[in-house]
Image (cartoon, rainbow, N blue to C red):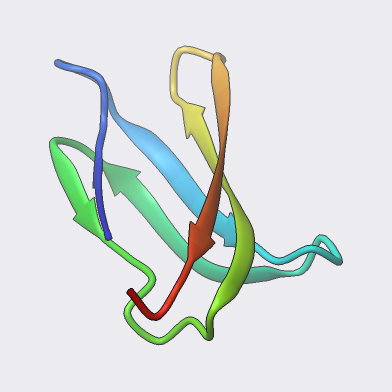
Length: 65
């Protein structure tokens, strides 16, 4: 999937499984990040920690379709 970071922002991004284990981490992302290509089908949380101290969590489901 492609994750778009807020305009003019930099963030650290993690993909976390249902058990809270980080599966993919990218640091100092700006613009867009390509992630999740090696993830199995299932539910995940994307945690976006911006350098300004704000945080976003996005729930996704990777399906075969």
